[in-house]
Length: 251
Image 1 (cartoon, rainbow, N blue to C red):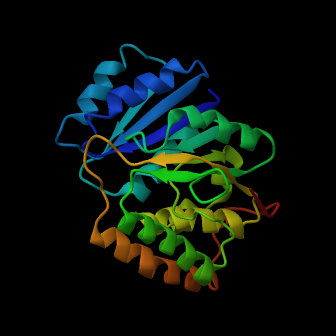
Image 2: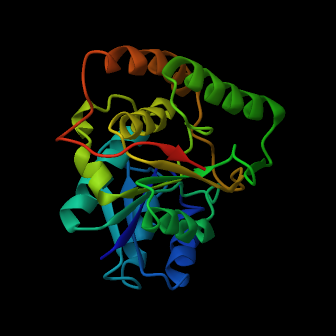
């Protein structure tokens, strides 16, 4: 029980089966935890049916209602830490994050990174099939975040991440307040503030081919306001769950 991939889902019936099969076919001993927010399209039913094929490696946590990306990941983090996993991943279900890159993120953590981020905006990274306005929004959000928080990350909203267990144990997860784009920023901000090393690994991010994007105006608004609140609140409280270690970011 070393590596687990947390995949939050809401209406991902077209993607979740192929994603699970791909990860499981890699032969790298990955386990998967799906955190489903009561998907009305039967996503959870598909996962539970597949558990017969992967009885010791595929798990599901079902929640009542659409409670948000951030709370789904925190639920998954706590589950994974209780279960004893050493490398804990965030990944989308829609293949915008390609499972073949999991091992590159894991290797970065084995080589000394505390948090490895699959980055679109470092040398070698790129985005495929996004319209111009979505590209501009994402790059503007990255620049805005860097200007406000001084977070030394080129892709602060990235959602393809590997954590060493010790990093998540060190964060007071009750202090993480946001659920959309701002959740991804706040987690990186917390890791950086606690002195851990973040390493950005270039990936090719491909826009989803199946299903519907969860992006909406509320998530964008949370990102804009959330960045200001993250920096402001950092002056008054710590993200630490206990005493802490190292520092830095490398690419």
